[in-house]
Amino acid sequence: MRRYAGIALIVLVALNLRPAIVAVGPLLRQIQDDLHLSGTAAGALTTLPLVFFGSFGLVLPLLRRSPRGERLLVASMLVLVVALLVRVLPSQIALFGGALLAGIAISVGNIAVPSIIKRDHPQAIMAVTAVYTIAVTVGAAVSSSVAVPIEHATGSSWRLPLALLAIPAGLAALAWLPRARRAAAAVPAAEGSPQVWRSGLAWQVTAFMGVQSLLAYVVSGWLPTLCQDRGLSETAAGYALGVTSLLQAVGALAVPVIERRLRDQRPLVVLVGVLCLIGFSGTAWAPIGSVWLWIVVLGLGQGVGFATALSFIGLRSADAHVAAQLSGMAQGVGYVIAALGPLAVGAVHDATHGWSVPSIILLVVSVILVVPGLGAGRARTIGAEPEPVLVSRP
Image 1 (cartoon, rainbow, N blue to C red):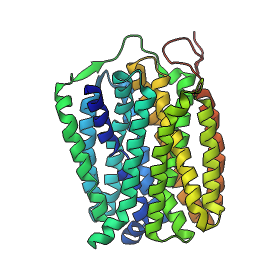
Image 2 (cartoon, rainbow, N blue to C red; image 1 turned 90 degrees about the vertical axis):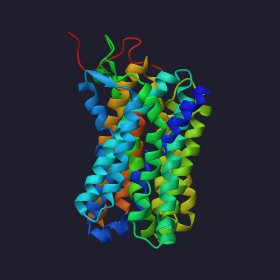
Image 3 (cartoon, rainbow, N blue to C red; image 1 turned 180 degrees about the vertical axis):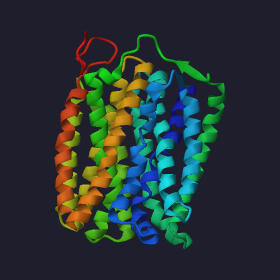
Image 4 (cartoon, rainbow, N blue to C red; image 1 turned 60 degrees about the vertical axis):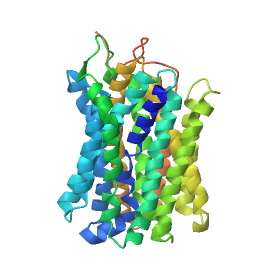
């Protein structure tokens, strides 16, 4: 029973780790018009939090003592509440400042959860990671789907739907508070722990995490706008993003089922690449009446990719301490890579006045994704046995 309670708490946090970003997509055009933002600046609005999504992972190696995951999660949710409320103030400075703060808050949660899964559920990493992934995607799906309907139902502006996201974040902080009080203040670094930053395998995990996240955040930031430009209404475009997010949950749920039949995760990586190629092609160029089919394909591919990338953190780590290091590295560097996506797509769209060139770029990135994934998918472990490193040994 205690195990299921722990999983429920993980789910509660996971539900808050994407809405602050994806709920902006359906409202992005209104935000642009209200605050007079260019396409590049609008892209930066979704990019800025992503730049800091893994920021805590870059700071983590500098800490002599690592704070306990429970305390990190409480801090993460409280800072997120502040960020969400600041972001809706009537100012461009508040808009971008709140977005930056939200990215930092989410970063802490992103890094802490995989190491908690490795520590508390070492025999069920794929299954618990799939549940965590599903919760992340459901949170994204619900928030992106209801943002515009809430605005219309209440007769308000874009600010109310975004401000309401602070409520579930506050509830998550309260739920974790009892465990945070019982937790030790900090955990010293383990003696002789491997330097993941020198590990070739760790860099493959990081590259796969970064590239699949780049594709995912291009979708969350620009799919509604693309669909509107191709003829869907504002509400339908928001639903399109919601459907994509819900299908990501289905894709994530399939990962542990498929993985049981495989020797390693390389077939999953190839599947992700193929589904993304088909999904992006259909969404960009197929008749608009068939867009829902391509959105389903794209959502399934991204769900499998996200669950696989997160599972690599636990599967490729010898213990919870290595998992914390790898989580920090993979997400710290990976989300910097991901942050380039929405900004680059916004800039290319502005320059070409269309979606053909950005879509071709996304197809190329979908192929590139497979390369590090094939290396990360091999059954090896960081910290358990010797492996090639990226620098020569003396």
